[in-house]
Amino acid sequence: MKKLLIFSVIALLLGSCSGDGGGELVGVYSKSWKEPSPYGMLYIKRGSFTIGQNDQDANWAMTSQSKTVSVDAFWMDETEITNGEYRQFVHWVRDSIAREKLSLVDEEFKITQDKKGNELKKPILNWKKDIPWSKPNEDQQIAIDSMFYMGEDDIDIFPQLNAMILSYQYSWVDYIQAAKKENKFDVMRGSYNRSIEGLGVTKDSADVMIRKDTSYYNEQGHIINKTIYRELKKRSDFISKKRINIYPDTLCWIRDFTYAYNEPYMKLYFAHPGYGEYPVVGVSWEQAQAFCHWRTNLFNGYQIANGGVRVQDFRLPTEAEWEYAARGGKDLSMYPWGGYYVRTAKGCFLANFKPQRGNYTDDGYLITSRVASYPPNDFGLYDMAGNVAEWTSTAFHESNYSFVHDMNPNYEYNAKSSDPDVLRRKVIKGGGWKDVSIFLQCGMRTYEYQTENRSFLGFRCVRSYIG
Image (cartoon, rainbow, N blue to C red):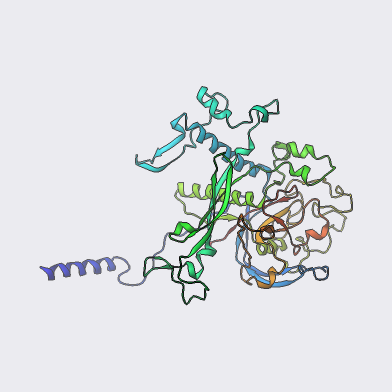
C-alpha cells in the first residue's frame, strides 16, 4: 500500500512537470506588456553626460566640480506642475475629508463590503456617492459647515474653506535602512538580526534599533510629526509616516518680497481660473513629496481596478536626472537650448527670468508665465530654465559630486525632526522668474530648506522607466 502511495505521488509530480514545459526550463512569463505612457510626460532615454557647471565659478565656491555619470531611462513631466494640476490634489483631499465627515451621519459614504459581499478589513470611502454641497440635509449641513472658517476666523463675506484642515498622510519604506547589514533578516532564526558580530559594526549583540518618522494628532487636534527610535522586530518597522497640510502657502508672495505690492498674487494666483496654466508655487519639498505619493496611488489604483498592473512610483527627479533632462542630449551645453546666450539672433528671450537690475519685464512677463510659453529643448521639455526653479529629491551638499556614484548618482537624506537645519537642504535647479541668467544654466545648483514655501519655486515629477 505504501509503495502504491509513493508511486502515485511520484507520478503526480512527474505529471505536473511534464505539463509545465515537458521537463524543460521554460520560465514563467506573463503576457506581453507595454508600459502605459503617462499623460503629460515624455520619455527620456538613458544616457551619460558630464554633470556640473560649464562656466567659470567663484574661487573656492566648491560648486564647479564636474563628473561624467550615467542615468537610466525615465518619464518626465513635459511642463512644471500647474495650478490646475495641483488643484486636483487639493480637491481630492478636500473631498476625502468631506466624505469622512459625512460618513458619520450617512453610512452610504463608506463601503464596508467587497463586490462578493465579504466584509472589508477596514471600511473605505465611497467615491461614487456625490457630496451634497448645494442641497444637504440638516445633519449633512453641520458636517459640511465644519470644513469652513467659522466664528472669529470667518473674515470674508463669502464662505471660505478652512485650508488648515487639508492634511494628507503618506508613508514610505526606508530602503536605505532596510539594506544595512545589521538590519538584515536572519532566515535561520526567523527574526531580524540581533547578533551583528562580524559585520564591521561597532556595537554589541544588543537589540537592533531603527529610526523612523511617525505622525499623529495630539489632544488639541494638531498634527505632530516626530522621529522615534524602536527595536527592529518586523518589516513594518521600516515604514515611516508623515502628515502635512498640502495647501500652497499663498502668503509667500508677500513674505518673499518686503515693501512690494504683491497682494493680488497672494489672493488669486493659486485659486483663480485665470492662473490655471501657470506653475504652482508656494509648495514645499514635503508637499511636493505628498503630491507624488498621491499621484502614484491615483494612477496605480486606476490600473489595478481596470485589470492592469502597478508601475513605478511618481517622484521628484534626482539632481542628475533633472540636469540630464535639461541638457536635452547636448553634453556640456550651458543652457537647455544648447547655446551660450539667453536671446535668439533676433534678440528674443528664450526663458522667463530677470534680464537686468530692476527690469523683470523685458522678457514679456513680470512674474511667472504660462507653462510652455517658450520653445522646448531637444527632449521636448518646456521651462527647464526660468519661470520657476524646481525641487529635486537630492539632499544638498557642497561636495556631492565627489562621493556620489557614477551610475544613477544621488545623495538622499531623509531629515528627521531632530536634525539641524543644515541637513534639511534640498537641491533646486533651473532658476526662476526673479533670478538672473547665471541661475538658468544647466549645471548651476543651489538649495532651499525642505519646509520652505517660495513664490519662485515649483516642481515637476518623473517616473522610472520599466525595461
